[in-house]
Length: 303
Ligand SMILES: [Zn+2]
Image 1 (cartoon, rainbow, N blue to C red):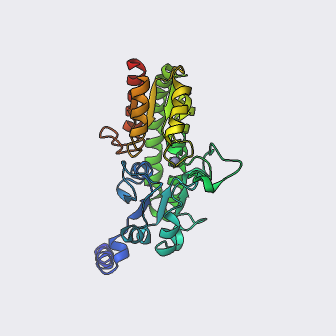
Image 2: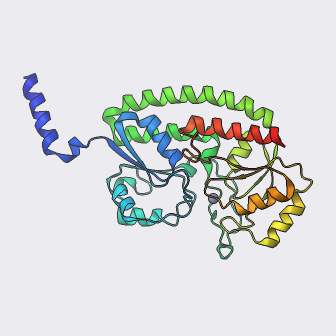
């Protein structure tokens, strides 16, 4: 009897591509969500990221390979709040199955589940602002990662109920390790509290709020628009005696403005990883926050 069942199952696996390919495919828009999907999904999922750590998720193309990936995905996991507005709607329209469409269990936009900061009262798109829905870079507050871990586990249980136990167990293990890590980061952040920083793009607001750092200037006058020479001169006046200790940029931000300002002021320009893979040492979510804090500590000690 048992043998018959096994044989039947084996035959079904050979015949049905769905059975042979039973793991849940997850398409993440950014590497941080791909990393979280690996943590919670483990061996039961296959994860692809639409962007890598040195790519700016504001600006990629909805290329055919991504359309093919979203077609096979049961879960789409993105930042939301308009970060992917230039390409995600095209992916969903051309390749997305029902399960990954808005309102369905396979559609996760991180910004829908946490408090979004910097929501503009008036959006003037003529200025080219790429944050019309508020600041979408929610992953750099580690508390938001914990919230999204819970959301993702719930969605995995919905789309793949047979493996609900495995998802729940991995979630519990992740949350325990994450809470431990956060306690350590909290202590390190306390020693950085009040540190003044200048940023290139408004990519760091969640990190700065969590760590209680103080943003004294932004090099982009409008989010997504490179600074003009006259704006940079204004920033220079503004920060000369501000006590700022670092000029922060992501790996994909242009480096000319921050290096220019650093040269004029002696404030170190620091490239933080921003996401998993943004620097070689940021190999997962844990080392992303470890290395980010280490670079901030180094800047504080240097200036
Ligand atoms: Zn942005």
